[in-house]
Amino acid sequence: MKSMEELVNVYFRPGRLPHLWCPGCGNGVILGALLKAIDAEGLEKDNVAIISGIGCSSRASGYVDFNTANTLHGRALPISTGLKMARPDLNVITLSGDGDCSAIGGNHLIHAVRRNVGLTLVVFNNSIYGMTGGQYSPLTPIGSRATTAPYLTIEPSFDILALAQAAGATFTARATTYHVPVLVDVLRKGIRHDGFSIIEVVTGCPTNFGRQNKIGAPALMMEWQKDHAVPRAAWEKLDDEARRGKFPIGVLFERTDEKEYTKAYDEIIERAQAAKKEETA
Amino acid sequence: MLKFYTERCKGCGICAYFCPRGVLEVTELNKSAIKSGKEKDCISCGQCEMRCPDFAIFVQKEGA
Image 1 (cartoon, each protein chain N blue to C red):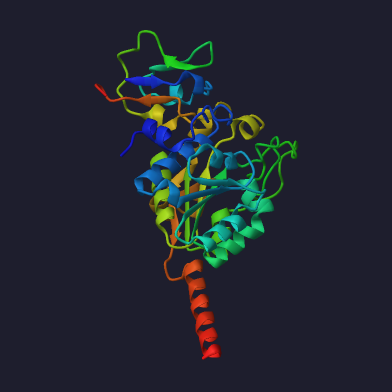
Image 2 (cartoon, chains in turn blue, purple):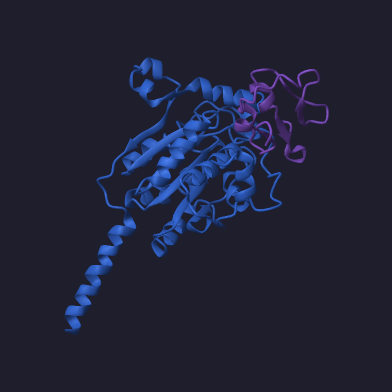
């Protein structure tokens, strides 16, 4: 097992640190956890593709030495799907933010989930559009202050994992930037899952969410995660009243009864080739 | 033993907050550093390394 310093030396492109994320931004913790997970799974650099959309989260792909692409706003999943179709042998890991994935890319999300494409989607949920200056996203909790909601948001937010599950997800998990070992664990399981896996990571945006909502220092945003996240086993035992305002972490849903998309597509190829042989015979 | 990459540190204070022994502080220059007089108090628990979002602080094993 490599130390974190060794992981940085092995997997970061030279000269990319310091990264551009704000002081106290949790995105660096998620990227570090992803490197730990990839290394622990023993994946070769050339067999990993990291595809991201647009936003603070999506800058992550540019820092690391894999096959990477920083693509279009909300469109990381279609491009990842195309890549996986062309190269089913690759471990395709898609990085996206809450705005990128649930708003402009919401449609792509539900269909990638429905098709069970063998991707690992990591949603950096910082509850805000950070890069563009703090506009509220579909995952901003109701009653929050944002640049576009100076008198607080009145819209209920998505539970993105419930959304994915309703669309037919075969693997959903959640972690936070406070619960690093849980995060590494669910990333590893998500990478191993044969089918579409979605991992929501609750992270803090001290600059654009924390400041507007008077949460305070970055460390206090992590304290908030510690106080509000409940491991799944404990969550199952809570009644509705005790669950109010809290959220479960860990692997929340997993099933293996559905064929992964590129494997199902191989069957089309076989059928088409068999039909062609009959025609020419 | 702690190893700092000072140029990566942005002074967010997460390491100092979570250090169980109060070894770390954010200096006037907005960088994480060991408090004077606390040099021998680090127990190498790795909290700072695990929580640092900037890859700026690492715990090194003695003799490594």
